[in-house]
Image (cartoon, rainbow, N blue to C red):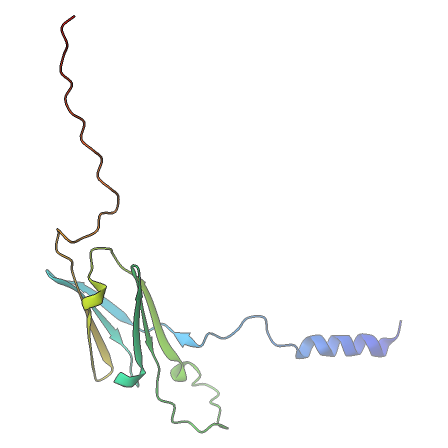
Length: 142
């Protein structure tokens, strides 16, 4: 066997990129508070301005994506601050009793506050359809 070929294969394997990809987002710290008429979600996203926030809903899933403004030169790379430069993404699965279309959000000093109103009892979708009531049977004389 040719040892040069074996060395080349070994070197090639060492230079291949790692199978694990580094995530591009990090999960921000958050807190939820149940109120009488709404669910309040407080998300800490330091370094993000209002233009960098995107809130999306899909069924009962709420996704908050907060992108930092990048002021770092293109050819500069930090060695120990990689986590600090990542953008934020928070995925939450919430209940069906919330009105996602009427949610309100406010950003002040890196603290994002999201209020999702609770649907009224009459408008809340049922998790399963109600069973029909059975009528009492009349007894027939025999």
